Image (tube, rainbow, N blue to C red; front, side, top):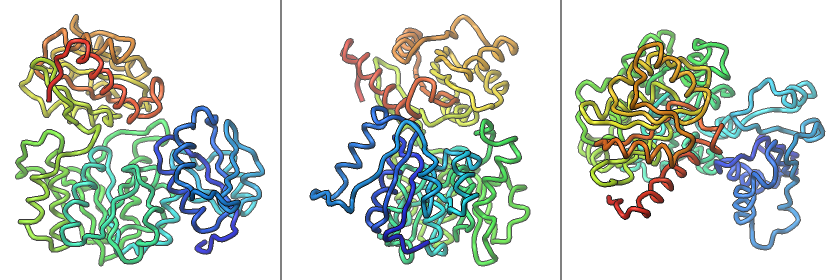
Length: 440
């Protein structure tokens, strides 16, 4: 569906991350009759609703009117739509989506629609369990040295529909989560897989199904396309029809703790495919400072360096971050909600840290249980009620490094992992303000 003027579009899931706002603006700009529906109330969605209002044209003509169904979903919004655009987080077996499909209504996502509109030969897609945002951002920096109009979108927090008008000619670097890949029927020209470990098993029936979702990034590639994949998971590429390029962090040297060598290795292989000189990509790698919430250095309190790694929402991600500080006296703040993941290996590795402050949540319960079972739980490990208490306890142990790397989801205490990261940074700021000991 490319002619959207006058079409009835239901946007299912406004959320708080901002991407759906750009989706809404896209449909409004195309002259569609837009309905937004979300189980969250108007009060809960206030920041997003205000942002959307501020983005609309100042005259706010009648054609920009949006129908809102908040705090619930109504069948009519799905039965009478020409198309439903769902948030990737909403499972395909939602009864409202089933109702729409059974009545001949097209159901898609903003990513699915974008891939219909785009020239996929101009797309570079990045997925993986850990490091996909950092890798995508670094690739974008490098590619802009040769293609200045290249854009970055997707799971990194920007709807690809924002760039729909450029999708035929400009190069797009698109970060793709497993949820976004679930609904795709096309593959990018260059597909990158950073790594794969257990995640989102509260959505996928088993780890194999999660891997299948990730493999969709190269499912529709042909012999003229490229798959750039971590050498450690090369078996996943067995049925690839494209040119397969393996990368490894073996010869990558970096002093930047915010950027894993794997991220750099993947970006270099993409640069080589596009014939970007080593001088250019090495300069961009050297100047790249990483992303917020990904091993983000936020300052010192006394002699303790503090890092915000809130996007580590699974145990593998947190363990990778912990390894960056081997040999250092490390205080870890972790815990949160479980995604039906395995925490035995994570708990075993806690023997390498100096202290642990464990936030509330079902994942925390697993970490504690396995810690007792493995004998790694000790008197320097403590369950805490909130971030302020976690921070205070951790600093009392006088660590060289304080790492906030939760290894779990955030939805029991925070709106999302980014809200969690902001709250952590606020806690650090408040702690420092009381003691006047924060420096950068």
